[in-house]
Every structure is written in structure tokens, then in C-alpha cells.
Image (cartoon, rainbow, N blue to C red; front, side):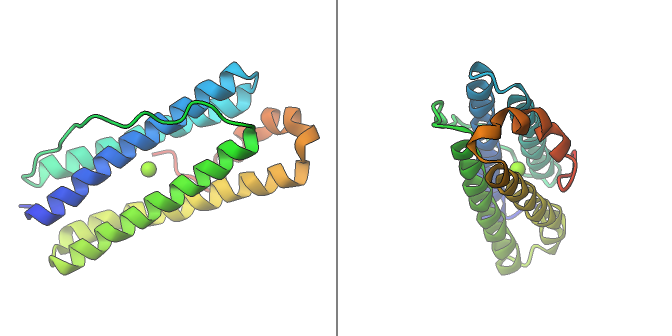
Length: 167
Ligand code: MG
């Protein structure tokens, strides 16, 4: 049975994974409407992945005798200056999510919930991969420069499987 503090912070993460999914969906729409087909595919896939994360939290909370809360989600930004701004914001957001996962680790230790501590390790690893994968995309954007966005957009899906797990 989950204690209240653990259940609450897991539910906070349900909302954050839902926001992540919607944030990347809004970015995908922006990319699609600006002729960036590859970039939009990458972002749609990323959005699906965040929804899978949300569902993992929901099923864990319910399985452990808690109850997942489905709340309203803040509207994500829909306008971006360019591709570089999109990926800078993806990286910043993933760093925020990593900090959020680390706070869950801290609560599980304080509450001596070693089952949840063990379960959350999947997401600790996942965040290392997410940050590395987005950083490598930003590195490639810097290498290619503003004049090669066409090539970047054509090649971005090939950069996808490098670090990230598909779950
Ligand atoms: Mg996630």
C-alpha cells in the first residue's frame, strides 16, 4: 500500500508526464505547419512516449492500492522562433523532469518505500537517455547551422533510436 506522500508525488508526476506529452504535441504541430516533416514526426513520437510514461505511473499507483488522479493540464506554448528554440526548450523541460524524478527518489527514501524506490529506477535511467538524446540533436543542429535545416529535418528520425528506449 502506498503512503500518502508517495502517492501524492507519483500523482504529481502523472500530471507532469501528461504536460510533457502535450508540450511535445504542440511542438509537433508547430513543426508540421512550418514544413518540418521529420522534426514533427520526431516530436509526435516523443509525445507518444511521454503518454506511455504517464500510463506507467497511473498503473503503478493503482496497482499499489492508491488512486491515480487525472487533472487539468496547463496549455503549452504553441509558437516557436525556430527549430533550435524548440530543442533548447525540450532539453530544458527534460532537465526539469529529471529533477522531478530525483525528488520522487528522495521521497521514497525518506518514507522507506523501497518497492517504489526500486520501481522508479527505470525512470532515473530513462532521463539520462532522454537528456543525452536531445543534447546530441542540439549538437548536430549547431554543427549544421541555420542554412542546413532541410538536411537536419530529413535526417532527424535517424537520430531517434540512438539513446532513447522505445517504451
Ligand atoms: Mg517522460
